[in-house]
Length: 633
Image 1 (cartoon, rainbow, N blue to C red):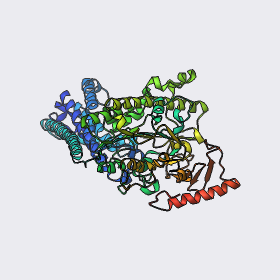
Image 2: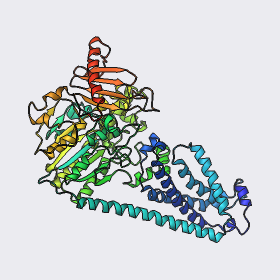
Image 3: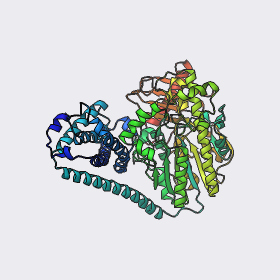
């Protein structure tokens, strides 16, 4: 191919006068143009939901990709250009390239590098096919360029560099300025808040199961600082998430609606505009609202969670995150870095990043009162943290094994006791690190004189399986370890301390709880019942002992068959005594939580269990049959 292309040129054509400076010019033009077109394709694909695979839904981008990808690619492309220009004379002596020229090879090389991410961004073309298709397009581009006069080609390359450079820089400046102007305008036009309105801090510790907090009875001292927070407020010992993965659970957390109502689950993981969110209600009452998400896969603008927030930070907040959202960055993070011993998720936001971003926003805006959502992912796989914490709970044998161990749990139900134990040690170390970072956040708020005037609601969106029931990670079942989460509410002016409540509660009641505490006497737009009933009077929440808690998870295709939700939905109902789990295929599980909290003995097929399953099943169906249920008992 290269020989035939070289043969079409003449002695005065491009090949005879192409120089090393032209190579660098070509490299820069390829980076800027290729990255820009990659961004256009990616933005276009996101407008066609049916094109998005499960993996691509997590690969979030916004219009910023139009400048991020070009400028991220500029450095490696120029590096390749320098290396190629410096060694081209040697490479051109190889038999394969001897009858070609520098222009032909350079045009094919950088054309291929520019076309490859554009083709591969769809995620629907196999890598080898993408490489061949990109090579063919690069060859055709080189053939076309060789027909141009040398001076004209140089002008085109120069114009391409300057043109795409100005376009992408303009997009970067426009998006930054527009975002700041929009936020400032919204904050200026806030309604006047009520007198002495407290701040609200909703903290979500992503993927944290309740039974690994020392304050919830865990054998390891993982959360010394959170235990101190619990002593200043109310601890709900049996709080349950509406689902076992991020999107549906967060959707319920901000709307107060059950999963079958808001519909944000595996089939359509986007929060619709059907129901108001807690952020919208707080903004309407004069609160400055902001969210800082470390879960840049699902708790994002693309998933609809920015609604009601004046300021929303998810992805594109660091150079590493920007790199990870380009095609080449994603390939390097998935293929190259693990081979070099890098075990964390490339571009992951650490707790310190979230804290700094929040405090920076707070200091710059001087917003009072504020409603802020903070999402941390320290306890999300992979379970790695700074070394002092990472190995804290490992014994000598585990420390010896740790350097060669990957802390990403398997998708399969397999897992030796040693593997499970080491995963749990990494998980607990990550939790201890997060606990220390949260204390730093509280210390900073105290220094600013804000902590005592802030209602703190701390919880998680779901738990995590660490070999329990033969499963790992989350989003694949509704067993207790995946839906029982911590819930601590602290605010000295309104919340008694210390109080521990054993009655089962649902995270979907957090919106109505917050609004009933802050805006007493106003009818709430959120369904459910305020959790304040459980601490406000001895008999205020007595009837809730038997109120059922519903959790749901949709069917997933393309997942291991051992997963309970593989190609079938799973729903569950929790009471103070029982946990009923039903699958779409008719399988039923029943556990008596008071005697079997680990859910190891399925009583559904016992004579008494069949009666109880039928009764609880009828209550579950009654709740699910009402589209806009208000949680009937």
